[in-house]
Amino acid sequence: MARSCRACFTTMRLLQMLLIHYCHLSAAVMTYDGCMSDSTKSYQVGGWCFSIYRNSSWAQNTPLQDEAQTMCHPHGTLAVGVTYKMQQKLQSGATIWGTATDAWLALVRNNSYPAPLQGWYWRVLLPKGGYATFPAIISNIPWGPGAGAVPPEPNNLAPNENVATLIRDYGLSDAYVTYTAATYGPRSMGVICQFASPQWSYTKRGHGRFADPAYRIAQTNVHKLSCLLQCHQSPFCISLAYNPTTSDCQTYAVSPEDPRFVGDVTPDSAYDWHIRDGMEY
Ligand SMILES: *[C@@H]1O[C@H](CO)[C@@H](O)[C@H](O)[C@H]1NC(C)=O
Ligand SMILES: *[C@@H]1O[C@H](CO)[C@@H](O)[C@H](O)[C@H]1NC(C)=O
Image (cartoon, rainbow, N blue to C red; front, side):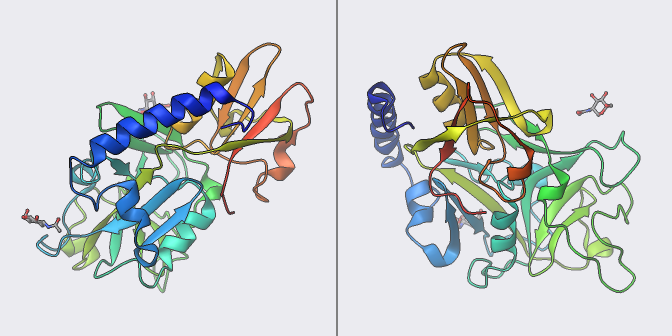
């Protein structure tokens, strides 16, 4: 949220109060505040909190990804990899995993593409119904390096490995949707939940935009407040470029301040950057 925008602040404040009221009616742990309350069991960045949920009563190699889609509801969703660093931090987070060895995130592959690196996209079931989707930026994913006879991930080894898990101290790995012990060995599954703060700030910082459509979540013609809300309500959005003269709003899944993408910025004085505060790359 722009610091100068009083109307946005009022709206976000109202949204926050409604959400706080709602959250108090239900269990505390599976919420943004619950996730934030234990930094040893979560990764917190840019107004999001990620944690790995596991219930010790789950049978080995369960749940599968479809069931995992609803397990963080109604206050969170199955997680997307918002940055390379976020995925790395979770993978190597010594205290985050509990007893889980593998954890679901919302990454699936469209198997009409021939190569294992093609067709990956984030597909998140929202609590209100419907899926939010976004084509994955492959270079922004810390795939597992492989080991012994296993080639680097994604390797489509099973084959038809069209979903992905994060494996502890390894990285992301493609997998067959039934995740059987016969194929993968006995695994203790976790579910990576993503919780968003009801209120967050998106500071205006400099000018420019991304021209590469692979980074763009949406392009709309709206007021600045709607543009900021659109970004805030997306599980993918880290930055936006807004043109106050034409009202062109472009939301992005990457940041112009991320060293991985700074080289792709198109200088354009007509567009203001607004970037999620508190990100790290
Ligand atoms: C674990 O699952 C059991 C059986 O479904 C349920 O009763 C229990 O509340 C769950 N525990 C947690 C911590 O989610
Ligand atoms: C998979 O990709 C094909 C080819 O691009 C496309 O026609 C199809 O709609 C895609 N399926 C899904 C579920 O996205």
